[in-house]
Image (cartoon, rainbow, N blue to C red; front, side, top):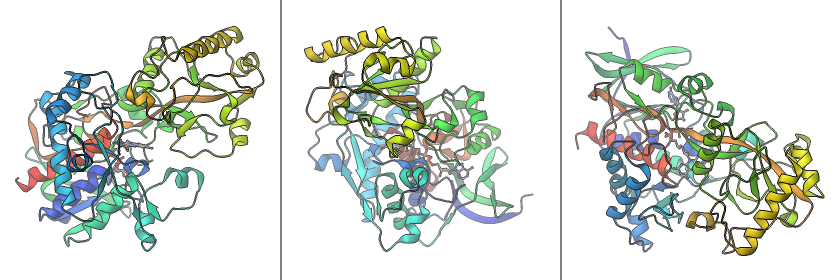
Length: 511
Ligand SMILES: Cc1cc2nc3c(=O)[nH]c(=O)nc-3n(C[C@H](O)[C@H](O)[C@H](O)COP(=O)(O)OP(=O)(O)OC[C@H]3O[C@@H](n4cnc5c(N)ncnc54)[C@H](O)[C@@H]3O)c2cc1C
């Protein structure tokens, strides 16, 4: 017998994009909802995102901006890049579900989005979009809402570098803030921070509630319609990463400290099947003086070299493809960490990266930590970063030759729209010729793990026989991602989280 402390229709676990969208949908559908968030702040990894974008083809926001994409083209693209690694019907649910979700959300004045052109990540795949299928939340000024502002995680500059809290919500913080404001309209909503889910309560094969911990006490919450696990990935749990073979480390992952995989564990204990457990949304990680390599993107110069002083990839490729390239080469025994971005002095000693996500601190700190090196000659630079001098000199000479031709015959840098998105209309191949020469240290980072509980097209968690577990749903990085082993376009992670939590609650609401 469970001694229920609280009761609701829908229990939502986590408060990233999925948790907030799930709770919002439940409230709007007239269901009572309790959201439990493990950490001291709402928002999860979602709130760290500077863009907060979602990849939802043919949605109304894109349409108003003149987009003429079709859902058939979007499906063709998504199928082409994901392949058969995940069920076709799950892929279709994602691709076709985003536009109706935006219609639903835009009926609420508190929720507003803007088109944010961002090329698809496989520019040569059939029906790839050069302008993307991506929209972002409209920023929100909150000078009169200090409590709301404080309650939302991030931004990364504040959390990692102690920067002041801005009084405007941007990107993922705007998405979370807008949901929290929208939720105020509904009476039957309880949002609890510092309240981790510990385990699920299963009766006769159905999930009927959960045990959470609050103020040091275990409390049972009954969920009449179901439980949505939108608790992010297990990015911060090094033990689980090791157990499931996720490359990289918890230290270099971008998720909040609280993404520990308890919801994954609870789901597995309740009988859930899992998939893609070794997967994450990858990226190269610029190493900062705190020792953590952090997701960095939008490079505007430089080349990457490995321990042999060789280029090994198209440096301007989308971050997940870059990360996977490094991991594949490490697996093949061809590469070790760290690797280095080598660049010249045309913009000074700071590496040519338009979006470091974690804001840079003073240059001396990187230099003192041995992370950024400078030298008058490439030979000296090679010695400092421990690669063969003649190889680095030859690599840069070859790269400069390609830059002169304007064509990267070796790695195709500049061949896809994404490669050219941050060049300001210039060439993707910026020569390395103006000394002093510099190098910045890189490792591997991730934006969160993406393996998890297998679900059907409305987020119902499946058991190992492929049957839905009654009362249990999963979304976002707690579910096995519909995108499988690729990252089709910016906005996939947040889009997947928001959409499947929404579909889950709509299913519970009976529509
Ligand atoms: C800098 C940066 C930029 C990014 N930009 C984008 C972008 O523009 N578009 C995009 O799609 N993706 C982006 N990503 C990736 C994306 O932010 C994440 O993959 C996504 O937000 C994950 O969403 P989620 O809802 O699954 O989990 P999260 O947002 O991580 O939320 C999970 C929440 O669950 C809580 N939780 C965990 N365990 C428990 C428990 N046991 N009980 C209760 N609560 C629990 C956590 O504390 C957390 O608050 C970016 C990532 C970073 C770091």
